[in-house]
Image 1 (tube, rainbow, N blue to C red):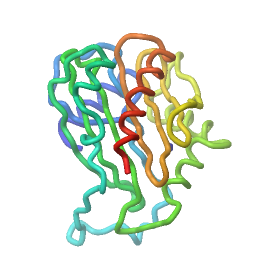
Image 2 (image 1 turned 30 degrees about the vertical axis):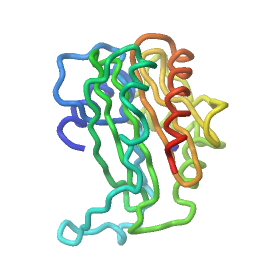
Image 3 (image 1 turned 120 degrees about the horizontal axis):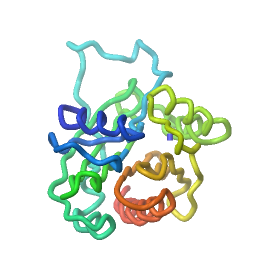
Image 4 (image 1 turned 45 degrees about the horizontal axis):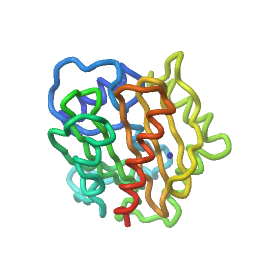
Amino acid sequence: MFIKPCLSLFCFLLLMTGGCDSKPGGKQPSASANTPSAASTPSTGITDNKANPETRSTTAEKVEVKPAVNACSLLEKSEIASVQGQEIKEAKDSSRESGGRFIASQCFYLAASFDRSVSLEVTERDPKNPEHDAVRDFWEERFRESGAERETEREKENGEENENSTPPKRVTGVGEEAYWTGNNRVGALSVLKKDKILRISIGGPGDANQKIERLKKLAVKALERLN
């Protein structure tokens, strides 16, 4: 609950370390094991398996649709630097569609030390194919009830799970609902707010609990700006 050349590099690094949630930062020297996730997403980014093939446009018919929210507008570089303990050199944005039901805005904040970079993604309904509960339905499938089990299976299929991986963990005190996915090296916090899903991924020092606390600080600031 739940891109271009630089993003492809970032996802490759994340797949090697335990997650993928994404935004480009350009080709970097080899990163440490603590490289931030997506999701799917990871997410992070969101992959929708329910989309009706009839709603998918052909290349000739495809009309570019921009997300209503620009993820790079939700966090200042200085705010991330204060949490990650590293100067943020630049913030790069991109967007992507997923299966005709969702559209996502992504921002990759490139830190002086690549492993402390941060990826931020906001997922909302695709305005070309509006479904009133599309985002919440996805959240229900991904995290609630047996959704946690499905998330774990998705990580296995994507090669993201290792011996330190854990099922999604409920996190309180931020958004309507929030879940952590990851391990002690890298992970992401997915947060539900109304009809949008905010996902922030980080690596860097500290165990899973310390990463969750840092992510909560960033999520609170981002949610204040998320309409």
